[in-house]
Length: 203
Image (cartoon, rainbow, N blue to C red; front, side):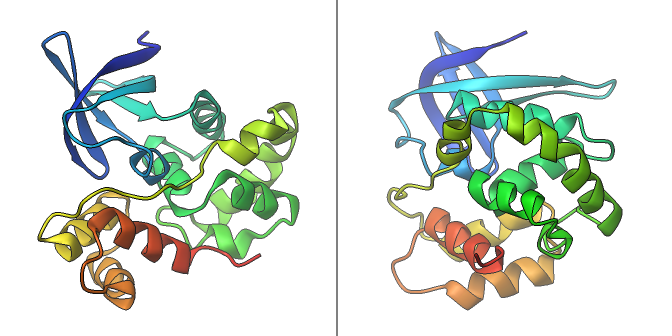
């Protein structure tokens, strides 16, 4: 099991990134909460990892914080929730928002996220209630805290739409979400964050 990686960011395009560790490039997938915390390409980074092994692929997931990885692992133990859905959950709402949805039994807000149907949302509410109580309260506060993104590539809108599609949104929905918040000079990561925030449940 790979517990963490410490190396240099050589590529990042949500939800994929590559980290060079002593000349070996590790491909990872990460939620948007981690992308908001990533340094610029060429700078050092430490990511906590979780490896998912399947017959057709070995996929490494990276997280900026151990608590974030812990929540991801707890989500994977819910029947019907795989890595893609867990990644979408951590990208579509932060830990506090997710905890509120579980506590309030807010199935409707959970079903707005890609890949989460009504039955899955109901299972999340039932099965995660006790698991959230066993997690450190501070972890729920700190697990997913967006920060300012760096410089934007020229195709910010296209990159943002592609990222949302990769997270499970349908192409027309992803395009609508991004274009609703698009503005001149705004980078792709900021666009993704704004689009996901606009779609997130309001407290």
